[in-house]
Image (cartoon, rainbow, N blue to C red; front, top):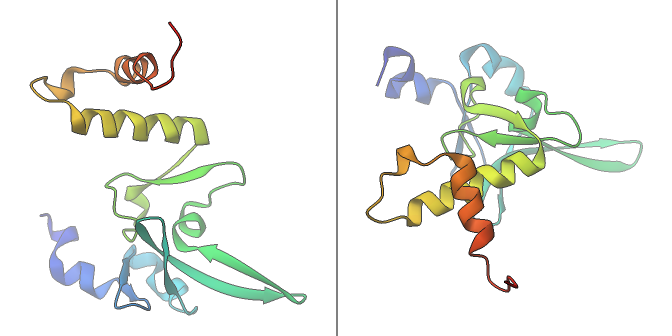
Length: 139
């Protein structure tokens, strides 16, 4: 663990959420983000940092990672290390939804592989294997 990622630094630049959760953020964004009240919201099997804002009688939810990464509409914000509460810029990547889906298909398939060296399989080969072996495929 580098000096930038030391436990003290992570604790100092994490934002307390509801449900006893904390979101890790970059030091330079900490003051700006703590102006708002953030909640921990579970979506599927993951927790995300979310804040609510009311404008003209409508309630809007803002996900912290999308705010930090400035994710445009139509894109997905991917957490590179798989931790959706690690919202440091270095951990966020904006992707097209299809690329994000392919990334996770490859990742799940690589986790299931046994006996093969995962790092030598290209994303294209793994995605092709997934397509060829999907249930209900007509030969």
